Length: 395
Image 1 (cartoon, rainbow, N blue to C red):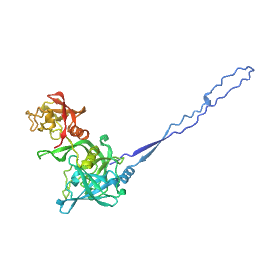
Image 2 (cartoon, rainbow, N blue to C red):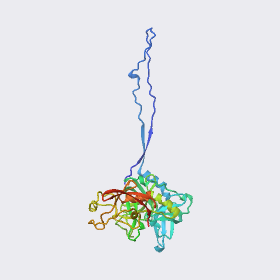
Image 3 (cartoon, one colour):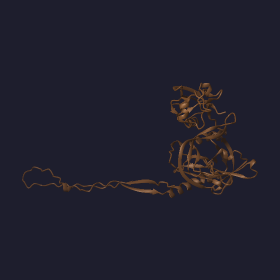
Image 4 (cartoon, rainbow, N blue to C red):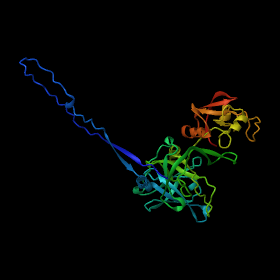
């Protein structure tokens, strides 16, 4: 992939003095009248003031990536996991240092069955790690290590809300045990949703993780928990999964150019609670919506809705915040299996437009806590209605 060079523009302004020669003519007449000097066109320097000179200093793709790697890689660690179920074998993952106190971020799924953890630093230093807190909803875990100060190189955290599709990104991690591997690509899409590792009541479904970043930077088994970075060397997400239909001889999925990353702004919200309390509580509404969260044109027509954007409510959980607030699920036959008509369509929350399920779940994760009251804008029988909902914790 070609990466555009960055350019620093240095402007030098060259100042010159432009002099105008004024010649006074003295009359030979004996009169004391003073004559006004005449300025001739030839008396003016015709050379114009020089324009500012622009000198471009370019950094090549190689210089950008090598500089970024040298700065960031010391803060990226490899994680070796021993578990009671492994029979003595180990699994691998990645992580990164976030402060000088020895806190390391990785995925929950990397360490969920761990009985022992080994943390390997790029310098060759190895130490044991302990799990401080885990979050199954965002698939994040915080580890703690006791390591010399020179080994703890925190990596700055960026802002995932400012990302754009097409932006160049870099992944560093431990794919297939090859520690310190750098790959590059672009942000392929924003606002994806994935099933979380938090099982919903009933045992047949999982809560949803929202705001997920999609990238084509190569991510493989072992990259999990490692950083996705912008070209400023800031972490914008934590690599979590890939989508693949191809597997290698060991049964591991093969990269297909579709990788998924947890946005760093969710991590920044969750991690302080994991360090302090060991867990984080998410807001809960208690509604069911169509798989994928989007309505096709055919479904919109079958449901008799005036628009397809929004979150359509199929059902409402008993004794949930949605039930107590009076939100309605579908109860009428629509002609489409498992899609009853007559439900409310959520089109806004606290004055923000809700176009799809990701908009709703991302807002709840990033801007609300259990106990908060939010205002939903819904379409009920194609009439706009405002309903306040007091949120609870995910059960």
